[in-house]
Length: 468
Image (cartoon, rainbow, N blue to C red; front, side, top):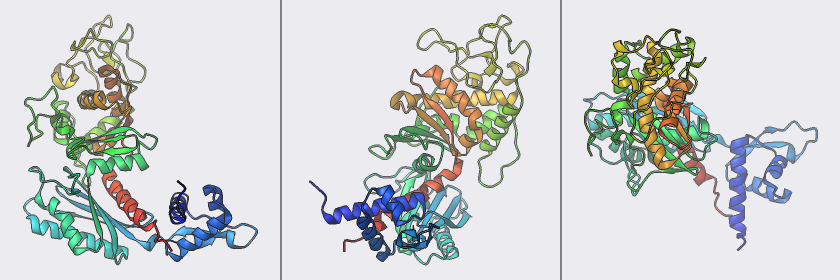
C-alpha cells in the first residue's frame, strides 16, 4: 500500500533533516541530489521545515548563479537544548549542548560518601541548573543520565542495588520534578558502546562487544546494530562471571570472586604492585590502574625485548622482532590441557627453544622474583592480558561478536599494545576469530553516549513536524 501524503511528507522531512545533520548546511539543489526527490517536493519540504522553526537560511553556497537554490539551509541548533550526565559513585559530570550536539557548558561536582541521599541529589540537580544557565539554555528539552547499575526494561528506571548509593536512583525523579524536560536513564556501559559505535572504535561494526574496564567491569552487547539489554536489563554483567584464578565465587549480591576480581581497577593495581610497578597519582578522575597501564604500554612500546637465554633466538619459540605484535600460542594437547605460551610473552624456555606450559591465567599465578629477566612492564601487560582474555573468551564463545572493544579508562590506556596481547590469547582460547580493539573514547564515552541518546530522542520528536 502506498504511503499517504502526510506520511510521505513526514518521511521526506526526516530524511532531509538527517542529511542536514550529517552533512551540514545544504542548498535546495543539493538536497534534491541527495534525496532523489523532485524540485517541487524539495521546495515544499524546505518551506514546511522553515515554518516549523527547524531549519533556516544560514548563508549562501557561493555559486555563480544567484537565486533560491544558492541559499544554504541549516538546522536551527538552538531549537532545543540537551543535557548529558555521567553519574559515578563519587560524583557527577554534566554537559549541556544544542540540538546539533555542540557543547555549550560543562561542570562537575564531587559527592562525599557521607553526604546523604537528599543533599547528594540536590548537589547534582543544582549542578545541572547552573550548567544550563551558563550555556544560555532557558529550557532543557531532554536530559540523559548514564549511571552504573541495571535499568528496568519495563519502567526505564535504575533498579535498586546494594552496591550503589541511593541518590543514583532518586536523581532522575528529582530532575523530572525540577526541570521541564524529558529525563532518560541508561546503563553507563551501554552508553559507552553507543558512543564507540557512532564516534569511536566500532564505527565500522554492526556487531561487537564492549568490555568496560574502569573502577568496575561490565560489558555491552550490540548485535546487528541493536543494543541488547536482556530480559531483566542485565546483559553484560560480566563482573559476576565465575572465572578461574579467584579465591571465591561471586554471589547474587556481590561480584567479588567473579571477573570483577581480575579486571577491575583495584585488582589491576594489586597486579601492578606484584611486578614492582608504580605511577604518580593520576590527574582528574582517571583510575590509578589506567595510569599504570598507560605507563606500562608506553614502556613496552619504547623498549625492545632483551636478548639472552630467556628469549631464545632460534627454534620454534624464537622471539619475534616486535615483542608487542600479536602472538599465537602453540597448540595444546586437548581440552583442558595447559596451554603453552611463546617465551617472548613471559613463559619459561629452555636453551633448545622448548616452551614451558603455564597456568591458563599465565604470569598472574607465577612468583615475580622467579620469572625470567624480562622487562617488568611487558610482563605486567602479559599477565593483565591473560586475565582479560579469560572474561572475553566467555563472551565470545556465547555471542561470536567478531570484535571486542576494550573500553573504559583502562582499555584506552592500554591501547594497541594491550589489545594485541588480548587478541593473541583469545586466538588460543577460542576457535572463533575475534578482533580486539582499544577504546577510542575511554571514560569520556559515557558522557558522549548520554549526549547522543539525548540528541536522538529530541530529534525524533522535533524532526516529525505536525501535519499541516
